[in-house]
Length: 504
Image (cartoon, rainbow, N blue to C red):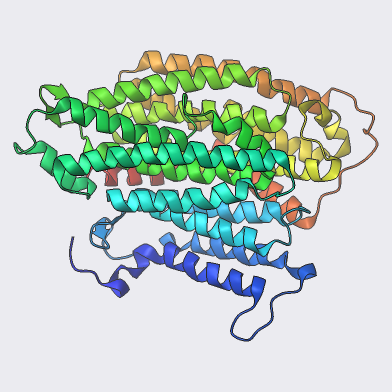
């Protein structure tokens, strides 16, 4: 573990330290600091650019300023610096930056400096969560991600749906966090350790004894907490209501940042605490959690896609799509059981979350622009979008095709890597179920595209203008989705290097 040396360990924590400084700067611009006046109300939307470009700059730090040791446990064992943590930190920082740019032109959030501050704080928690290697840090980071999001879900104080979504999110989240914390407390009680790697060492020793059942109960409790965060069935009930009721930029952020950070810590927790060689009372613990993950994957994919078929709101459709996407990603988690290349599953999860961030933010950016112009979030009202703004229609098509897994969008390789990892782990039948679900999902994505291009609307002759910021957001995310769909190898190799770091 080594001694704590802040300056020596600063490069590994540069994104977190930078986010803390950025939060102070944003707060100062909003309310004034050091004797300087706050920005006037008419110019507070500029805070969005400070927050966005600040987080974008911090996303570069893992490449520009890295510590000497590639893999190291720092901060007294609380945080593990490795390539995988950097992959997910970059993912959530990009999500935070794009979310701020999506929100800048909205009437309800554009000039609200506190909105950008809360996004930064939640992103700080997501970065810490991505690298957490201790039960205490996992819980603290998880709540640092979640509590700001409970607030943001109810940001529209005069909207009953927003208030309802915030309350549901808070109640479900608190319940799930309590169950997870109980699981953590059981694990600590069994082992007397909070560091993930020290827990594993204790469980391997003869001191633990034959207590498989209590250990498996603790594992289930912890998985419940993670399942809530990633919107896996049966802990997905909050998802459609929160996605629909929360301001759309908030929905966009919740759908990617919280999910990505939760998957990062989920794979780290399962691999570190319950490795393949851990046998308790004759029970191979990995077999148990792999089966648990497989069941969650199948039910999440199937239920998410089936319920999405009947939705009339585009945000609720993407909510159930998000449940299904969590199911696909869990295939990669289950593939960790591979005896030959367990890193393939982790790499597939990391790549999928990276490309999913650009894909989902692209789709939600179009929804934000459309809703600002029309006041509607109904799928039927997207009719004629190709004539009202062909660039928005093209961007939405790219996003939906990526979610469906159709080339040349990034979702094709995202699903390919997941299914390939499953086949390598001798889970061919799970990959087949994933393919069948992807075919089902293709139907409702194509229906939306059909409505955009084929259906007529009374407002066909009323164009929807794009601001410069909106055009840049759609352009950057669309290009990123296409690049990741044509030449994914660089990012996938980076994700593979990160996956390998978990098995060192």
